[in-house]
Image 1 (spheres, rainbow, N blue to C red):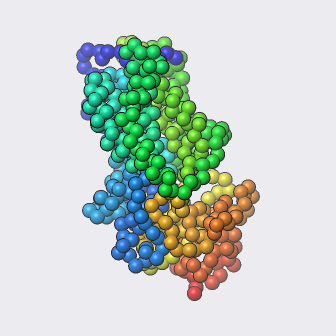
Image 2: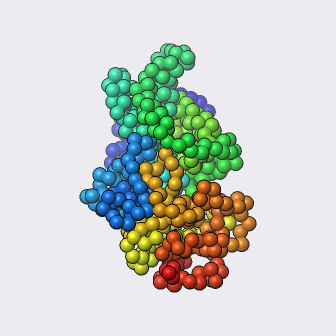
Image 3: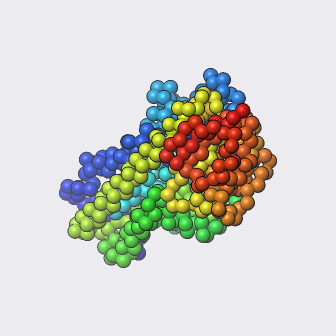
Length: 525
């Protein structure tokens, strides 16, 4: 493995994978999986849509005001929320959300390609292998503010590199004060990642100009200080918010699983093979004497890996903190690969063709997976035709005894009760200091997430469910959930994808609709 400086751009026409029409095609292809689903089938997104409905209609709804409170605040987690506030009055909530989510993968792809272009003075064919990571595990999980902020961070990093290459550092410093604030408001992780990328890249640039590493680091810190203003916002935000739980440090088993799960979607073998293909490309770069790594992005990848190692799984009550970085760690390593000197045309063409084949294969399977999920959602959401406006619905969504590979896309299906019926759903997050919405309605132990998740009654659950401060902590079994459900607090029970349960536990409930692995009961009053 060799770290190299960027070679000058060779004379002559661009190879086919660097032409502008082909780059535009690569960006547009990334939108294909999201064209068919009316609601993007991302796990947590449906839950967020419930919150969006509250923020839009709380003041005008006689029902939502009984169940929820909403207060705007300057926190580092507002990207899609603000765009929804802008676009929903024009397009309606569901179409506005689709348009916003539809923009994230092409922005991510464009950011990857721009960074590669600025670092290498060209786009190496190996950069194409990084593009499927636009549909990585965090995005499919529905971390949409995070995903939007990371797309913006890579686009901003491309601009940072370009202005540095052109010597316009004063203009860069002026521009990146508002840019850093904008990305911070979108999501804190994007701002933190941008700061890390800009500092590490500037340190390498200063070192390449003759400074020793200590002086290069000092100068890089001065340049990166133009991104420091959001620290003030963060201190104000966290000083007013409850501390929240920060836990699960150095969980090596989980971190190894996150590395394997970068493409986790539906078909485990294909997703694991896809991750292995990326590792094989990296190994080939180490093995092949014609290939090497950019010092710039190689150093950035090393810094991100150290951050991934140090991060706990839970920060301020928000889970999967370390998991979110894994696809972008892979992306940085792949984007760092280049030819050491002159491009070997035959090798480059083979890599470009293989990269394009891999990209198209991942897009095709993701499109099929999304279409299957969208059809399943369409069938199950017919239940809402039998739910009156303002109804209180307890959703119970089945999952396995242990989490299976396929993404649990129905976990927050109950939030569509809020979106389409302005009712109450027991699936909303109750994380103080992170969400702008608070739950006002007291449904006992079934007031908030994760009470909607149930396991088969045959499971031997290691974490026994318990109630702390009137909130569920742990896992329900389906029979236990039905037995403990406070019927006086709800009007309907919506059972989705659950294992067989004791029918005696639904006595006193009237079935009003049945669909694919789904049943809606009205609680007899």
